[in-house]
Length: 193
Picture 1 (cartoon, helix red, strand yellow):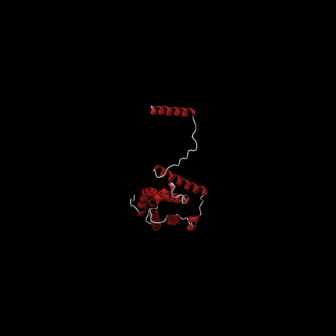
Picture 2 (tube, rainbow, N blue to C red):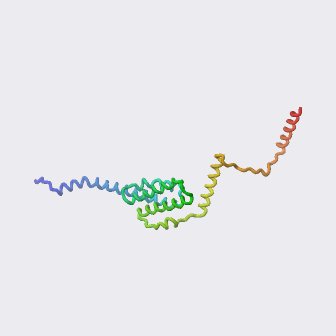
């Protein structure tokens, strides 16, 4: 009986034991990559669908998730985070007119959105990101009215504004009126005596 071990025999034994371990690790890596890509797509989708509603909670959450879900060492990922940082820096600026601030905010947001789209494989021209969207006039009207109501309520509650009252008529109650007349007469009598 020849007990010599050949290289191929050793390779078969190693492959038998290590094969399943390597397969599981590869599967885990694929799953993590898929989850990361799904989160990135969800952020992009949210930003696309809420790009005119920058105060919507889901829009704010998507913006805040960018540095987490687009973290990585690649050049494209770094570029996305740089655009995000520039956008975030601009959001806190108060040294320019509202009109200029809003225009710059829009441009920076589109630049960031464009980089994300490119990274995810969407070939969307910047002009489409800027202009191709559906925004019913009623949404804008509603948002403006709600902003006015909130502003008015804040002014009312902090005392910088008041509610104007113009009483046009007072409902009459004969019994109450008679009681008031009687009280007035009693007070006059006591006052004169």
